[in-house]
Image (tube, rainbow over all chains, first blue to last red; front, top):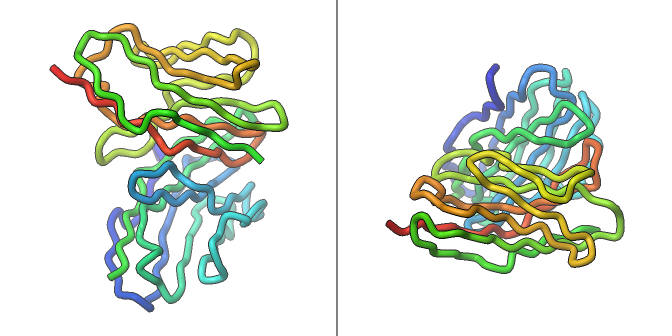
Length: 113
Length: 113
């Protein structure tokens, strides 16, 4: 596609439910990153992949958060047993080369009631 | 570990006036530096980047930034702003290669007619 796409754009869920957020990177991009952005803050790193391999998941806040990229393209970020503190904008980015220019998607706004 | 400090959370400026958005970073290794812009309800867009070479970097929309290694700064400047420059601006740093970005908290630029 022309750019990074994310779905859904908005997600409202009740506390305790599981949610899955999808990221479709720019075709051919090797690396895919997940960030979380709270209101009034900059994006904070969660995890990233090179191809299908998860390279670093040190930013995932706890074991309710997981991510996968099974075929080295589309990625899913899953949050189990959501809590109100999980409410934020979740952003995905992809990059092609070692110059690390990351292209960002529009984000998914998650609201946990 | 790396960190980024954006010294001003909000900067109001009159149209056609110059502006400088300040960014300082901390890192024990060489870094790459970036400025991203986020327009309302849109994703992050790269304004400019410093990888190596000339310390004065020119980006899109008339913005430029200067890398100052001794002061560990990467301030963003524009000689004459437009209403359309109203947005949130994020400074970011990385170690290079396909590694995650570390963002500052952002500076909200408001251009007043």
